Image 1 (cartoon, helix red, strand yellow):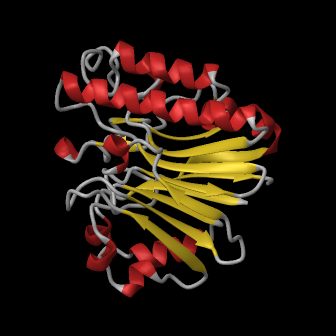
Image 2 (cartoon, helix red, strand yellow):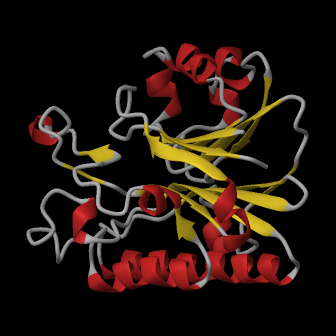
Length: 256
């Protein structure tokens, strides 16, 4: 099974950049989209009704902000729910959950803490809420996959200029501690599991100063799996040749 995750930074904007054809060419079983910045009634059928997929959209109450989507191959038929069950997070449309039976997939656009201390606090509380859900599912004997824009680089190897960004949200010590907590909760970073020391592998580049052309970026998009799925991972990497957003898609190949 191939899973893909992509922060599109505005699904209406990317619709004019070949989005539908890109999705079809991926030939993935499930595609998690983050930062849609749209309500479903603002989208044309070329976005909502891609052949071969059933789509699910979860929008923020605030228009033009946040939001997630999930494209699922029609024959899979998971039970899909929305949100983490806490209204202050769920009004922002950040989480779609697909129950595949033994495995539960989270597609999440985690908060960005870049606008100040209160936003960092909100982000960390969101992490806590998510981890509590993971703990509950593990206690039920479920496996968990989480994909999305986590908005934090874990280690110095995961961004171009770690020292210069050590006081910037996305690489703050208190945020990076939560990447350790993810690991402690049994969430394995699949890319680093396969490529522990591979440098200069990023998923986001600022639009400023042609950062993508120079590969001055951050790795802030992840696929995590819990321990029961570790040995089923066959591949996990970036799809950095796909343009259209300031993020590139990432994929996970897994036997489930």
